[in-house]
Image 1: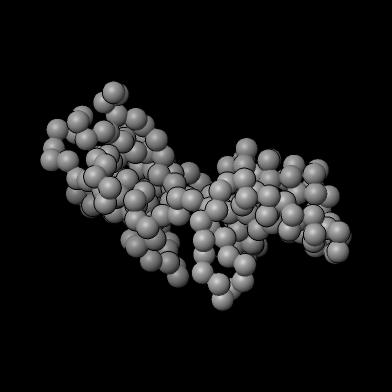
Image 2 (image 1 turned 90 degrees about the vertical axis):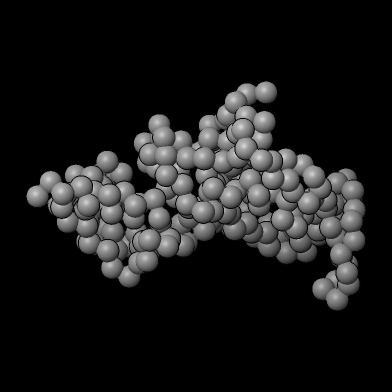
Length: 207
């Protein structure tokens, strides 16, 4: 078994690098989930350019979340008042296909829409667009990554002339002035906050 695997944290947009190790490689007492399976050890990747080995509590405990009451099988109910029942994957897929066919037959293609996750990658968006536009014939597709940021993008363009912050993480250690307003950066983007905090402390010592 490999000593560790490098991967990325899936939570916020910083994209912190993680090193995930099996319990045997961590050399520590093994924590186990509710089914007795060993929980893998998660640490920050020191070679990663954005997080530089740092990791917040969400990233550090990501392996523990895999067993916390997660949905493991298709569940179906006939109405909101009925309890869920476990069904096979074939039954679940057939029910979805039947419902889509019914909507298209009664309302047309524009009766179908999809609201995509902000966590989609480029390949995910490509497949989703192929399904919605090419297969189902509707243009009703949008995503949280656009709708959630539409007001921010408008502000970026008016104030900075760009539809995104025109900077990179390397600028955090080069800036003479960091202006934060309306944000709890320590809570929402702890890695960015810690990099700024380290830069400020280092700059003060230099002076």
